[in-house]
Length: 102
Image 1: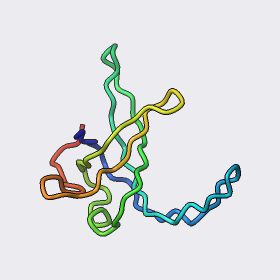
Image 2: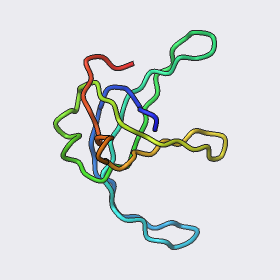
Image 3: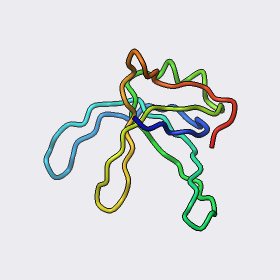
Image 4: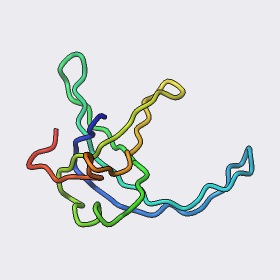
């Protein structure tokens, strides 16, 4: 399990939509946006905005504006890294507040 650390900036609902190529209906979802800091090979910092689909808005809504840690999975698609929030489990909470995000 990987953990995404950053500042929780936003919680929002994405509406139901239709895939134009396949006609598949994509259900509405709750999404969060986290501002994360990525250290590059040359030591410089790059700020990234990561949007994740989550199953429940409640644990996130009260933490907007706070540093957080979110368990995530990662995969590569079309030359980019894609993050997804892991479902909460016994040993991995959906989100936890931190004293400082990095």
